[in-house]
Image (cartoon, rainbow, N blue to C red):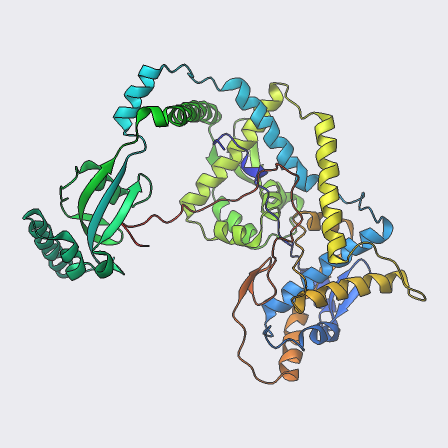
Length: 506
């Protein structure tokens, strides 16, 4: 997928978490109520009784918070299902609007990106030879660890040993024996430092540059990477035949040209709009990533995080994006370096500009396609809710509708705690339900639940934490049970680059 993609359309959902704050909570927190949702109440005693039997789930505030929020969201969904068992009244715009925006960006890209796609076989061969496309080398190395906080004396000592190894290797010593004797890489002794064949992009940049510059039989100078000091010997180099790689290489070159054209267009577009991340925006962005349940006032929601000529990214818009991300993604954003987060905010502004440009060009998502995607998303939501037992809600004989909602919700939570069912994350849909119905979580009551559960259990070693929609708490982990986006909807999140091998760290 190319870079000209609306960041806001990266759809990956998680259970939402909301806590009531202020005077109302202070007046209510002393009661036996932990949470309320659409006229239903979850008491401290009920919550404690749910958790007591499961010693493997430690009595911690994070666990109680996660359980109470699941109860709120499932209660609201079951309440909605009681009114309409097809869930046709559930607002899916939070799930679908980003996807529709991305379709507009795709249409814009197809019109404005003009890349040179005329490439003769001779031109392609010249590029192939110049870039050594698909080349692989077979190499061995000796790794000498160098701590990041090494003193000058330590660095000199390690460097002297590395130079000694290099000189012996260049003098004709058996490199495999040198690796077995000196290399500090795990398994180096057994492998003799052998890395096998590898292509470009598989090793640390400094290591790769040195290795691919060598011819078979040559030994490198000392190479420093984040993993330490290396001495490298290349034993073989394989360059695939042009005819075998011609078509795949052609597509690679064309893709590079399109990407370059996109980047040029984006730079021209954004430079002319003069994007500027506002003072304090990074702090606000981190706070909202940590607390997506925040209820913003009109004034706070209208605060500009990024300004550009003709528009701005507001705190409300940013919060809506955060509510569409799952907990690990939000944690990653909140923990990002300030400059990385500023760059991400610029990308959000860029995406807004792209959608705006698409509108100016007159692009629209076909209404029939919109209807089709809405039906598909609703079908998937309904299927997931039925699988969880939250739909349909049918009162049993002599049972009230309210009691039926509580029965199905508590039954599903019980299955989750028993590990008989996976958590059902509701994505940003949950926030729409919370805006439609009253929902409160009284934080002051959480510790009371913890105390009651601890008092009812024998002392036990807490189970290890595992990731749940609410964060790292010891609750059953979702296993593919989230409400999926429509088929074909891009999904993902800001990602950190995959770790490269330092030069054979298998």
